[in-house]
Length: 158
Image (cartoon, rainbow, N blue to C red; front, top):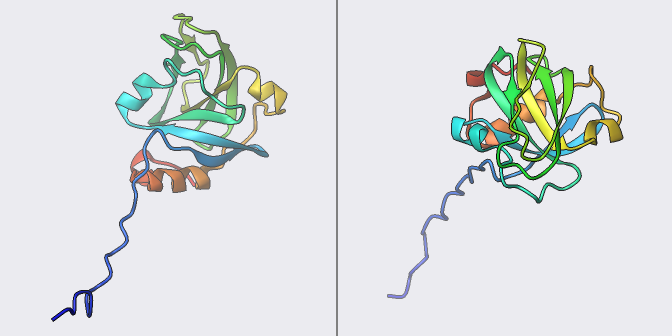
């Protein structure tokens, strides 16, 4: 009578959906960055607020559905950052420094931007990442899928 387990099916593997707290390896130019993805409105609103633990090659990328002009500020953000603005083709267009707790908005000049990548202050300069550098959109699309977000719904060009 002790036949427990005989003929029983192995449980199906459960896909683990990752969140904004997870990091994904994505290249910018020839530099590998471990990025958190801020995609949902509440993730984008929170951003890196109150964070003091950003490692040297970690950052947060903000992914938008449509190209637009971008504005960011440092409300409740104690870590000095650089922000890089990218167009829909994944090309870095503009870079600006952002100082801790500065509530002055940092507006892009371009009105045709799709991604913003926040990194530690001077990261772009220190790594030789300049306007024209490309964001690895294939890796970004794969990371979005791991977050259970359809890249096509964000009009991501691969």
